[in-house]
Image (cartoon, rainbow, N blue to C red; front, side):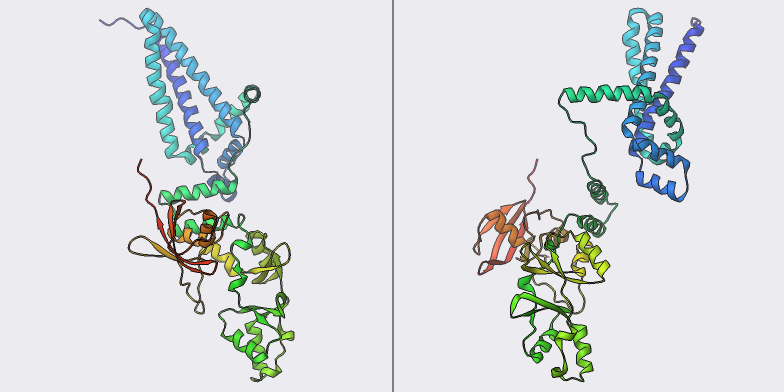
Length: 429
């Protein structure tokens, strides 16, 4: 017959089981509160007045204290369970009790106190975080003096070792952008939505000179030219707002809105001589080229304007920026029935190459082809080639950088007008 088991053995086994349950609780709580969606908790707290969500938000505000308290509790119960198991096994099995207890407790802790609760917590982080928020908050409050002392020791030791103890490395925008890219790679966000969300975040990183229409591409009118010529140029232009200058193109004196001109032409009963450009022109609005896009967007809304002239630090005209230019950074190219389709837009060929106009924006290429060409030093693809090559290339030259092959197809004077691009295959590991 099997020998009768002493009562204290059952008490030891029960204590170990209880401590393993506590260990599983702490392990699962740590994972749940680390993986919980802060945005969803804030929504539940605000919209549904959830007390559990409020407690979760309060806990994750100080993650260092939260993790410290959970780790302290988890280590206490694990060490106590291992000590009880070792003492029990030594009595039962003699000298073989310690290694046997180590093996058994390692398996029990790994399976039932670590992997299993963490797996469940990763599958249901929000639900579990809200469920454990109250007991964990009590644990944090009880252990706060010890955790505070541990934090002082840890920070002091790290400083002695020369390590910097700083806050989060990523900004809020970078963290949001990372989440967008992650969900896009997992199929949770389609490309167009990813580009649009990324465009909103980019408004703080771009300035008006990144999106403006360069002065060489502007249609400008000399206010002193014959009214008939001015009227014909304005009414046949694809643009509704045209800068007006007097004598020198740098001497901007106003902006002509085609709608104002058409109204004046109608009131003059078709007589150009009766139209006064001085009367209908609008005051020009100049903005620095270093203005952030988000600030310019807010300025457009505040002034109820759609058009501004961009100048450099010396006051020289650089180009114009419109409300549409900024919106296109968010939603992509906007074309109406009067727009001329850009001949040099990214058009993939069957062989995988892309022929583009030299003035095509780098951001437009990245958005259309899902590439990642750098746009810190240049706005257009021609500017990028010139910056990298440190020269103005000749037709036929080929350059390779940033994982893309650039072949120069056409050049007009000192301007690259057409290129062929091909993304190079990634090297095999």
